[in-house]
Amino acid sequence: MKIYPIETGNFKLDGGAMFGVVPKTIWQKTNPADANNLIEMSMRCMLIEDGNRLILIDTGLGEKQSDKFFGYYYLFGDFSLDTSLKKYGFHRNDITDVFLTHLHFDHCGGVIEWNNQKTLLQPAFKNAKFWSNQKHWKWATEPNPREKASFLKENINPIKESGQLEFIHSNYKDQIGFDVLFMDGHTEKQMLPKIKYQGKTIVFMADLLPTVGHIPLPYVMGYDTRPLLTIKEKAAFLNEAADNNYYLFLEHDAQNELCTVQHTEKGVRLKNTHKFTDIF
Image (cartoon, rainbow, N blue to C red):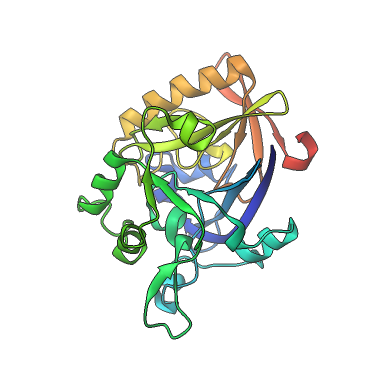
């Protein structure tokens, strides 16, 4: 098995929304804001080469949305999914599986693209299975008012219409090749891959832990549907991560690819940050 970090692009979000009830005077110490109160975010995906399978975890925003849409998110930098895949000698047609932690647009937008004439939405990975789970799929296709703007029909409906959609079941390790942790605080049945690699455990954090600045328990996004549940889930997970020295793969931290955590008198806190290539 080989694992590669895949940078699909950077964007910006409102810092207050990203930290909920935590005052700006506190969160800006780890996540500095610009003059518009925006903080830098990444859309860092993971590529797993395992035998004859090439598994991509999440896809970033994609490129099919309008300029107006992208204007809300202040895209910056030179990263893209295709250039990141090419860096490691791959093309999107090589992908056999796309594992979607959840169906918010910044995680699944790259699954679907326009055809050359911009008349038809089609899969961007023509040879891949697209993995979700039944409870989250139902949640996303019958969205509540709070999340409706994050579950875009143009991302989700073509996945089902493609015939490439698969659902994770109780035997998910046999299906996809790694363990999956289910979390319900951010959205219903978000899935976090838990991967054994080179004698270590890597957990793809998705939106349970967007950045290292979110490690303290009250630091919960305003986007979470059940913030008290997020705190409970995060507490249990971070204790496990500290006990077992997990490496946490950070999807949205623009500066840090990996981190580890440790027990302190104040609870679980950051231990170290790492570049992926420094550890693996």
